[in-house]
Length: 159
Length: 93
Length: 123
Image (cartoon, rainbow over all chains, first blue to last red; front, side):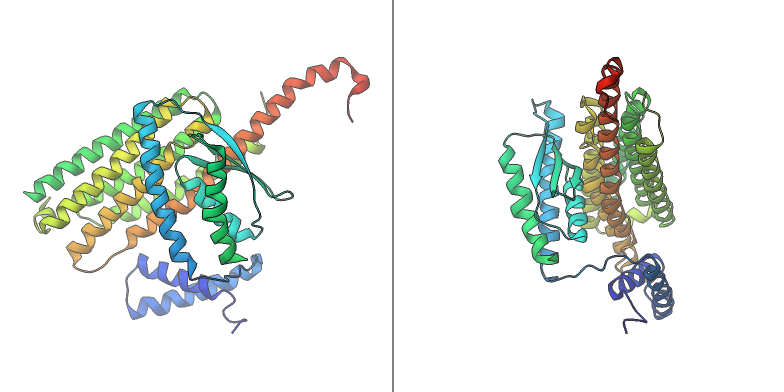
């Protein structure tokens, strides 16, 4: 099984994308599955690090809070832009304990796609993360947000 | 009645997106630095993609979806290439 | 717009609302790129359009075609997923490129001082 389908999740995701782009029918399911199996076998040549999902049940919950947080900060940033409110942009440096590559990638996507925060630099030797915050009122608040809300959940999922 | 509301709101939304693209183009021309221009080019790609999607809503044709997908793919690739170029290619003035 | 008449009222109104929300968020983001003064502030502005701006318009399109075809069609959601995955990558690369450029400008501005006293120059 390992030799035929080295990345089962990737194969399933590619099949779903194939069917979304064409149509949901038995023929496209078979064709898509063959293409996806070939593509995921080709992935082995790249030798990506295989992420281990320890507690995948938390993923829908994480998606939910991220969507709500993004909606909230959409309103916050929109009011900053429209009201020309005085703001204090600045860099915040956060010491991270998360070391898993996939977890860091997901955290980077969450931080950058939220309006108001942007991932700038991560030092893998020290685990120091530098983010830029548009409306920096309380530095500790942002550190707590990243560490407690996202990092803790991601560590539970990936480590 | 509701069809009229839909037509009007799609028209207003298209006007808003065109104004947004004009804002991005202004920043693209003004600069001041190369990274600002690349950032606005990326935003311009996304806004153009959204405009194509609203045309799809307006006409009820699903062909526009494919065009939007291609635009967003090209936008991603070109912005990544520009960012890499800024990091490695340019002589610092 | 003959297809709009075929829509039930709730679907037409919801589509209209979502399209307007998405377009106005995108417009506010574009105004933000004009108003902010520095690059690192401007990085935040387009994310309005790429997060819920794109999300709302994609949802509207998906809803319209689902109701019109009276079956669930989600290919538009593919665009939403694609944009929300790729935008952070481009913005991160741009932020790092900017940081790199600003640092090397500071370094090259300091270089003449080193040249005046060649004895101390680090090799």
